[in-house]
Length: 296
Image (cartoon, one colour):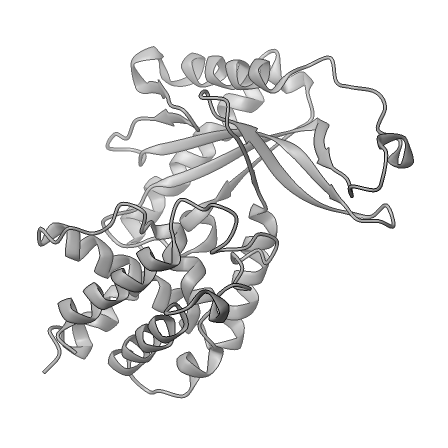
C-alpha cells in the first residue's frame, strides 16, 4: 500500500495559500519599487520580472520564496556562430557600463529601500530577508543576452556573472511560455505534478532522508517537463500519475542515450549535458530513493 493517500497527494499539488500569495506579491512589488525609485537606475532601461517557481506557478505551499530578475536592457552580451565575426552582426562597440557595476547599483538600490541589515549579497544573487509582510526574495541582476544564428536572428535570454567569476546564461521568459503551454495541454496537471514532486523532496528531507544536494527544485521541474503529456492525461488519479512519471524518468535515465536530448523547460539548454551540476546517475539514484520512500 502506498505511503501517502490520494487525498494527501492531491493536497500537495495545490499552489500557495492566499496568505502566502499576498506575501509573494508584496515582495515582487517592493523590489520593483526599489529599482524604479533609485536615482541612478531609473535613468536606465531595466526590466524587472519574476522568474523561477514563483513566476512559473510551481512553488510549493509552506516552502514559497521568490526570484526576481532585474535585467539591464541598454546593453547585451552575445554569442555568435564559430564561422562568423562580430562585424557580421554589427557588434563592434562595447558598452561603457559593466555587469559588476550594475550588480553593485542594484544592491545599493535594495539597501536604500530595505536597509543594510535586511539585504545580503550572495554569489549569484542579492537576498532581501523575509518578514511578516513579504517572503524571502532572491534578486538576480542580469543583462540581456543574444544567442545569434547564422542568418543574424537571435534568441533573447539573460546572462550574469557570479561574484566567483562564473558566467551563467538562462532563458526565463521562454521557460514561462513553454510551461504555460504544457500546463494547458495537460489540463493544468503539469504544474500540479511538478509541485507534487517538489513537495515530496521537501518531505524526504524533513524526514531525515539524505537527498543528493544536486537534486534541486529547478531540476525536478525540468524533469517533469520531459515526462510525456499522456502520463498526465491518461491516468485519473495522482497516485498513478506520480507512479508512472517516476517509472518513465527512471527508465529513461538508465542510459545517457535515452535522455541525452532532454532540455530545460525553455528548450534552449540541454538538461543532462555539458557539465551540469547534476548527473544522469544523480537523477536515476534519486528516483530509486523516491520510489522506495513512497513504498510503491
